Amino acid sequence: MQQAIRIGTRDSKLALWQAHTVQALLEENGAKTELVPVKSEGDLDLVTPLYAMGVQGVFTKGLDAFLLSNKIDIAVHSLKDVPTQLAVGLAQAAVLPRASYKDLFVPHPHSSAMGTAKIATGSIRRRAQWLHQYPGSTIENLRGNVQTRMRKLEESDWDGAIFAAAGLDRMEMRPANAIELDWMLPAPAQGAVMVACRAESTDLLTLCKRFNDEQTALCVQIERDFLRSLMGGCSTPISALAEIVDNEIHFKGNILSVDGSQKMEIQKTCSVAEAKDAGIVWGKELLQKGADIIVESIRNFGQNS
Image 1 (tube, rainbow, N blue to C red):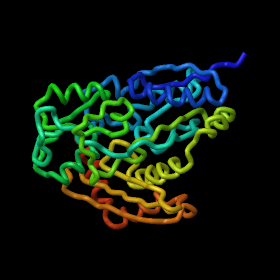
Image 2: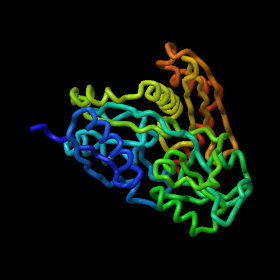
Image 3: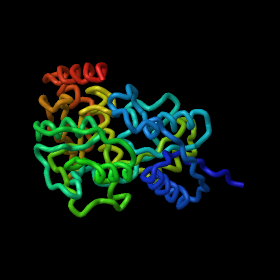
C-alpha cells in the first residue's frame, strides 16, 4: 500500500491554500497525500514587529524542524519568508509559477489619503520604501494573517495599509479600491510558493521536479542571491525583482535605510545563459558602490530594537 506524503504547512487560510495547491499537483502525479498543519513562531506572536523578533525564518523554522525530525515529508512555504540559506539537510524541491509580485495600498473604507498619512504595515521593506516616497507619513505596526490585518484596518484610525497582491488575490479579498504600488519594488521571491524536503529524499525531489517552474525558479534565485550577498535576512529593507523578457533577465534591486532617508538601487540586464551568479555579482557591486554603509545602519537598528 502506497504511503501518503505528509505535507507540512502553516495553518493560516493563505498557507492552507498554498498547501492544497501543492497537494493537487502531487495527486495529479499519482501520489497519496495528507496535510499536517504546524504553528509557526511568527503566527503565535502577532504583536512584535518582524524585524524585532531577532531571528530569520520565524514563519519557516517550525516546519524545518518537522522535516528534519521526519514528522512531515515536504513543507510548503511562501518563498519570501524562507531564509536565503536553507537548514542543513534540506533542499528546494520545486517552485510554483509566480503570482503577482506587487504590493497594494488598501485605503481605509472611510479614507482616501495616501501621501502624508497614517499607514500600517508589518514589513520593514514596505515601511522604508513608503517613507522614502512619503517622508511625512506615520507608520503603524500591522501583524496577523490576511483576514486579521484587513479587520484591523477596518477597525482602525489609519488611512490605509499595505498588502501583497498575491495574498489578497489568492484569498479573493482584493478590494475594488486597492491601488497597485508600481513604484514599490517587492521582497525577493514575493508571490512565489516553494516546496522543500529532506535532501536525502531523492524520490520526492524527482516527483516535485515535474511541477517546478524553471523560469520562476531562476528569477527568484537571482533575487534571493542579491539579498544574501547584501545582508541575508528576509526581514530587511532590501527589494529585488528579476523578470525574463525575450530570453533576457531584466533586474531591479534596491536597499534603503529603515527610515527611508537613504536609498541605493541597481538596474541590470543579462542573458538567461549568463544569469547563474548574477544576483551575487549585482549585490556585491551595490556594496562596492557604498551600500555597505546602509547595511551597517540596518544592523545597528536591529540591535537597538
